Length: 540
Image (cartoon, rainbow, N blue to C red; front, side, top):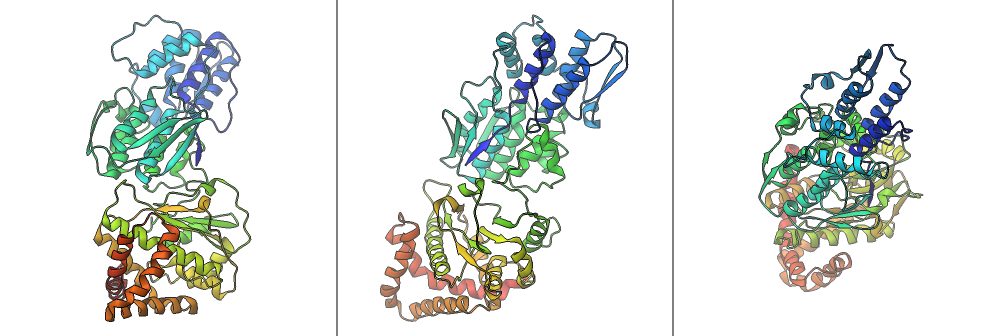
């Protein structure tokens, strides 16, 4: 999957200020550029049109870089002019102490400011850009890439981040080293960008970092540590209390606070961010919420459960089709592409994959079981007698879902996908299967036995509500075969070759002894799940 990053607003804003200083034409801006760049560009254009002696008020939203750069610019080029810089209340709360942005602006004006030990990377960047002007080229933004590193570290998988280079002027390129050293995320540079890949589990249980040189990375790194259960000892974050928000408190409380970096880091860590709260993201990354991640996210903000959140999501959608994914899946490649559809419900493939090079026994058993379930799902659907589907990867025509909504049993917390399948079949709608690698989403196995049995009992709890003949027949056949195995263990000699073939069709690397262990344990775990689901379904 390829991600288009925004341009570096740090580099773009320095180029804009240099163009203003030298009287050169300002570079063009567009709606897909960070708000910070557009605000500074428009402010500089307003100053060029300004008539000496006339009052002028320039509104800077919540753009701190524009404020610091323009404060220096006004002193240098417009001394004594009745020009007022204003902005959002948070911007006007910022203290007037010199910052790295103030020093950067002075360097861009040619002031001879000595190099200090441990100089801020932003000041070093300003020196290089001033020396190389006008040969400096725009780059993809490394600080925005940090959120995709966060996403991969938490969810696994691989992403291609367009436009990143190993010889970048940006200090935030250190994010690649941080995520390699602490979180097992590697970076491979190509001619078109960087491939970011989760290759191992977290490398350490303690992350010790001084964020003084790269404070913008703190929200992404802090929430990565939190989600992966890694302790973070962070220094050099004191000034984060004076950014777009108090980022230290915002991270602790999981709050957006109209802060673009908080919104992005929270979304990548799977914390709910409302559509209204996402508006601030335009400040640095206007296209951060592309269709291949989460065009609309169903959030259980009313505490009424998943089905209520799903209903809100689909009622709010405007497209003909809705592509459903669970929040914790790795999305398929095809999410980026236009999909030509001719069905009312499209069943798509899933694969279970561990985050770790050496999965636990519980994970390996789940992977084998999931492979058999997926093979049965696809075979039955292709034969015209679908008996299973999963809301973790499913496409449905919006009108069809709305027609079937009344049949989804809101009183049962689980089963929105299976009850949807039943209703689609009952109404005679067309079911299609796309069983291709590019459409395969990756799900993760559960890591504790308690969570595993709770999930299976929740699934089993909906079984008495099934009315579709194919689903009921399949359930009865599975139940009968497993009861027969308990009564006559030798039946495993017949069952195992058949089910091992199903598993190997989806997961060729599955060893025979893991499949055999699953086969031996399966009847007992199915019975336990079914009994637990029937007795506990009201408590989920």
